[in-house]
Image (cartoon, one colour):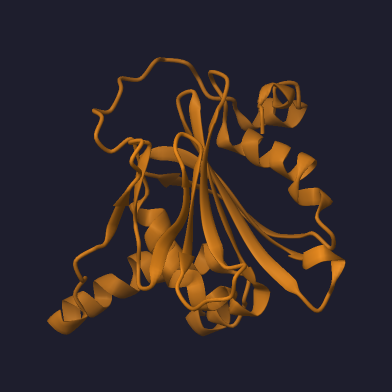
Length: 216
């Protein structure tokens, strides 16, 4: 099963679940040489988030209060993970952000093909992900894999956008999984108490009435 997943260049979402949680634990238990190395942690200077940088990944662009872009040294120029922060209305659900992203941006990419959707918890907050592919500038010779993860923390949301040349997708699965797993929102602040504002249900998402209030 693992081999089948690794042969699928676009399947970052599912390979990271296996490679990040199952394989490292098994190797560490069998042999201390495979134990985890000291993590290289990036803390955004604006205090918005922290993330572990595996291997040759490093920050290539930082815009305080807005976004940060990470790239691995020596990889193709399009290979990157961007973390973007936006504001959302009270009660926003990550699935609604995903829905609007598909309607307004992703679905308009040339040759866009949705491959998978999933819900998750990242850094203790609800998240929704989509994995897809498209033709860069409409050229089928340059297929790109992309994955977007939408995390909602109160009236803030974070969008993790990963993109690479589609045939390279599986080779970055473990690194992207590490970055997802380690992502923390406002790590230096105490966890805020629950406000009691309910998130939108799946049924409410389907009506579409709330979607236009989300700014992304």
